Image (cartoon, rainbow, N blue to C red; front, side, top):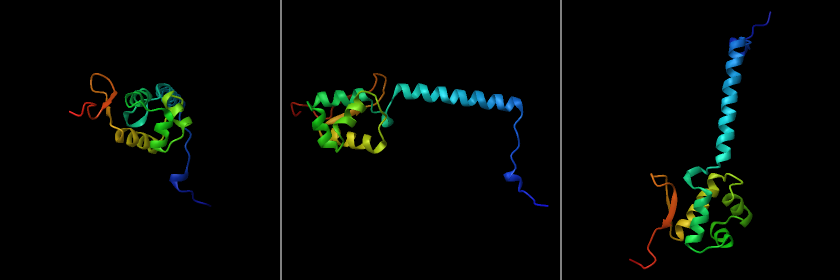
Length: 123
């Protein structure tokens, strides 16, 4: 007789457990769909912030692509909310924009945004 360890034994769940698992899975899937539709980037940088930052410093996508090492197509997809970028991509974007004088403003009552870290008149 072969002995099977208890950790390898699969027990069929009861019907109510199957129903509960199905409901939990359904809830998780609906949350995933909801959050993917929002397309909020990691690190609280929104596509609108990237567009606004470029406008503040008068950069084209080509300028930002050269400064960040990303492709123009990637920037276009990020800005139009067609993709959620990887953490390394966000870091490259933030580094390039912050080096150009942009400061990212997090959600602090007035909503997320961008501003120039230093004033244009030098004060």
